[in-house]
Structure formats: structure tokens, C-alpha cells
Image 1: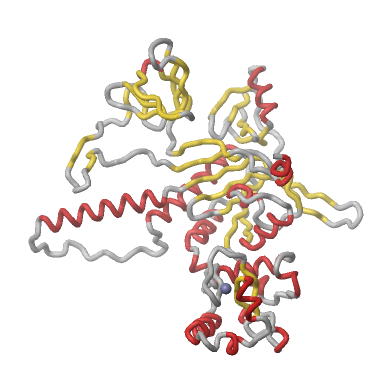
Image 2: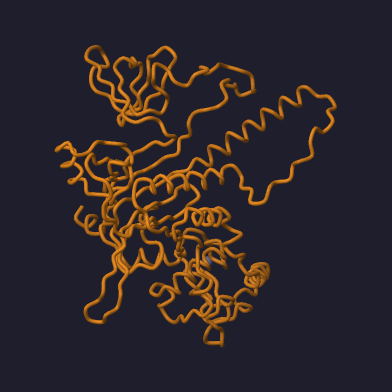
Length: 449
Ligand SMILES: [Zn+2]
């Protein structure tokens, strides 16, 4: 994994390799700034040459993929064609906590409603300002947007980013307007085929249109068969499982579904309703796009169809981070087989100091101060215990207790009751938990295993 480098004045320099960072630290030319993502600061350098660095994003509902790539433009010696290639420097996967936020708000709502119902009396409405402001997003979605933006800004401070690329839409409707598809081409090969497949999967809810089968390989199916003059236009295409596709053969849909009139009617109406543009489907992606433009860096976009096309063509396994690395127009990707930093949004603890029981009654109180003996829940610590049952070195995330006897969440489980006297802070809590995602197994490694 690349190591982020800052100069003497804390300005970002090009990330360096692990080996180089190790040498710089050994020779006492650099100091460690952060553990996650690992960042060093050079003690004797101000400024330096920078190469084009691009941050690529694949925003997802639960996890957002992040990839930092160095742009390389290679000119093909034979054809003189410019190939846009990229070298992956750093990969990250940001896991959001939208579900936790939604659950907490639902619980709070239920408790408040319950309390109101217990104390029933007439109360005049106190305000009438319930309209939602323009651009309002539900708290869980706003969290997704804000954490992603905060990581873009954080990486902007750690690396000299020159542009950002984001996967904006699931499929590019422009590329699908005239899909020149024939034979197997639209099943696998060309880019337009991938856009089309993504579109159809979305439109037909990833099910067989005829029997409703889910999680089976789906084939693109002509509603009016091509042999009877049916076109390749999207309005004549649907998805069917292999069984249904073969059964239908080159029959007309009316003939094939004459015993199932309800299915026929459903397909006929569904085929005519155009799929709402991804704009409405994915409000957060557009909101993110507009906020990214505000960073001042040039923002380019790609579609989900193209991401998948790139990933398949370059034989790259599917992870969130590697999906991000494959966004947009790209001819070759180097150095992608590296571990990704898994970043999990954990929050910064609760604002509410009273712990509530299931019925909304107080069951305990948190301390007024979050910091105990200089430690806070979420800090990464190393504890060196010399004697006793807990003797040894424990490192991980600390959970503080008012007594000064802490719990440490290590990679091997929770170690309870470690005194604050043995602990040393390695990195302060910043609302995220960090682990490493192992390198994805390539086809070769899988075959060897
Ligand atoms: Zn079927």
C-alpha cells in the first residue's frame, strides 16, 4: 500500500512506497503523522514534483469504494493511439452506518410517541414549519454523503489530488440509444451491451419476466422475436431465465403466454413504462456529484455499465475498492492487487448521556465527560502489561470506563479490565474503525490453491 507523505510545512507530496517510507523513518528523515491511512512527514523537504493523481469513487448504499490512482498516458508505438492507463496507489472501502442511524431514530421516535401517549392531554400545535427544505436528504443518506465528502477532503490533505472521478449513474442511457447488438455481442462483449444489460436488470428487477425466478442467470430476450421482425431496441427487450427463453423460442408473446393472461398484461404494461432516469433513483449520488464539483477539482463521471465492462475486460475481481478503480474510461490498470483499508464509520459515541431501557425509562447514566484519564472510547492504544493474568502487549480500540479500568478490542477479541496506567495512545478516535482487507484472490492464485 502506498504511504502518504507530507512535507515540512504539512503540504501533501506524492505518496511513496512502503519500502521508501521505512528507509526514511529509519534514517530519521521522517516522522509518523497518522497510522490509518499511514502518513509520514518529511523533516527536511518543502515542496516537490507532483504527477497527476486521481481519486475515484464508487458510491454504494452500504459501502463506498475509494481508489487513488496515478494517471499514465501511454502512446502505442505502432498505432500512435493514446492509451489512458492508471497505476493504483491506494485502495479504501468506506462502510457507512446509515442503518444504525435509521434504527436509532426509529427507536427514539417510538419512545417519544410512547411518552406522549402516556401523558395524554390536549396541546395546541406549537409550530407549523414542517416543510422540508429543498435538497433535504434523510439523515441516513445525509450521513453517507457527508462521510464520503469528509474522506475526499481528508485525502485531499494527504495527497496532491488533481482530479476526481465518480460513478454517477448505473447505466449510460446515451450509449444505449442505438445499441448495435447482435448475437453473443450483447450478452458479453461490447460496452453498449453492458450498459444495456445493467439497464434491463434494473428495469426488470433482476428477475425472469415470465416466471419471476430470482438469482438465476438471465438472458436478454426479444419480446417480439427477431425472426418475426422484432427490433433490438430496448422497448422490445426483457430478461428471461434459460428455461423460459428456450420454451418461448421464436413464438409470439401472445401465443407463449396465452394461458397466463395476467403475466402477459404485466409485461405489456411494464415494457411501455420508461425507467425513471437514475437521477431520481439515486439522489445521493447526484448530491455527492454537486458537492464534489464544489471542491474546485475537475470531476468526471462514469456509468455502472462501463465499470463492469472494464472490470470484466481487465479480469479484475469484484470488490468495492476495485470497482472504484475501474470507473470511467480506462485502457489498462496496473498494481491493483493490493490490500484495501477498510474504514468503518463508527460514530463518536452518543450525545445523550442517559441510557434508556426498552420502555424509555432511564437505566443508567454515561459520564458527563467522555474523556477518562486522558483516554476516550475509540482511541487506538497499546497496553503493555508486565505481570498478572493479563500480562502481555494488547493493541486495539479502547472502551473507557469511569473507574480507569478499560476494555481493549484487539484483533483476537476483547481484553477486559486493563488499567489506564498501562495504556498509550497510538491514534486518537476520529469516528472510524480501521482494518485491512486482504488482497483479493486472483484467478491464478485460486487455481494454484
Ligand atoms: Zn423464467
